[in-house]
Length: 89
Image (cartoon, rainbow, N blue to C red; front, side):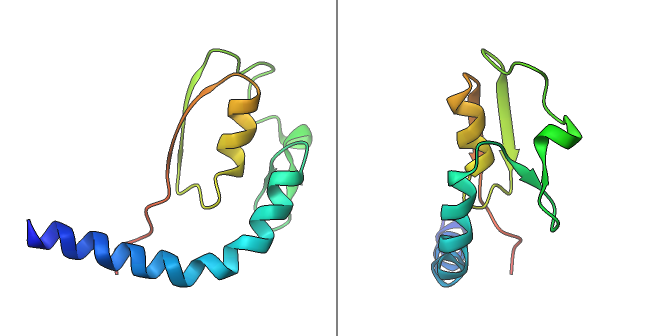
């Protein structure tokens, strides 16, 4: 039990430090009308990674950061599961 508690404590400490780097880019991402991908911010409308409609689909986003893609999917009717767990240190 203590190993899991230690992992949770370390995970939280890392994300608390990283949060300051995520807040402003996360805010900008949440304001977008569509998700963008990669370091060059290629919009979904160019890549078409999602089907035309996600209404009623179950989705999962792993390593979701600020979860703006998950929020975008949820606003379009998808059921969303997301995980922000960083790599173990």
